[in-house]
Image 1 (cartoon, one colour):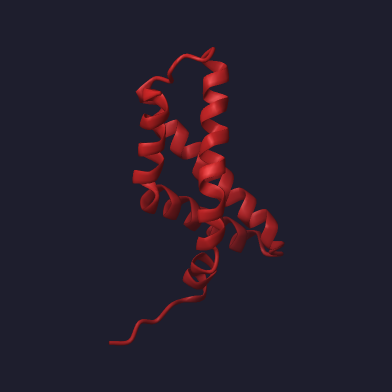
Image 2 (cartoon, rainbow, N blue to C red; image 1 turned 90 degrees about the horizontal axis):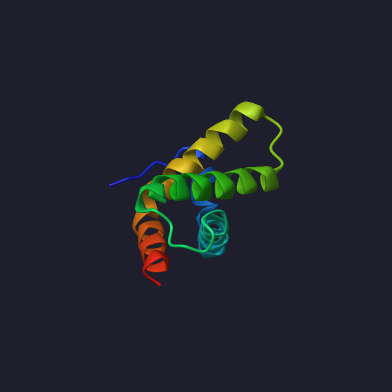
Length: 104
């Protein structure tokens, strides 16, 4: 069986290591910011989706900025792919981190 990878998919695949390197430090930073605005008390569980959205947006935006792409359409496409990838493939890691921090 032959698998064909498009250029758009290739852009995403090349950046998976960057995502993995940034994921845990970003989760820690975002969760600590949540704690600061919550006066050090555990964060409400209903903020999980916001937590994930902030993380996926921050990481994808940072990666796209570092690519120095000239075409804005390509930048938006890559950013959206990265955001969706992060939310889908790292959902469990983000959820577990969020609930583990809330339990401590």
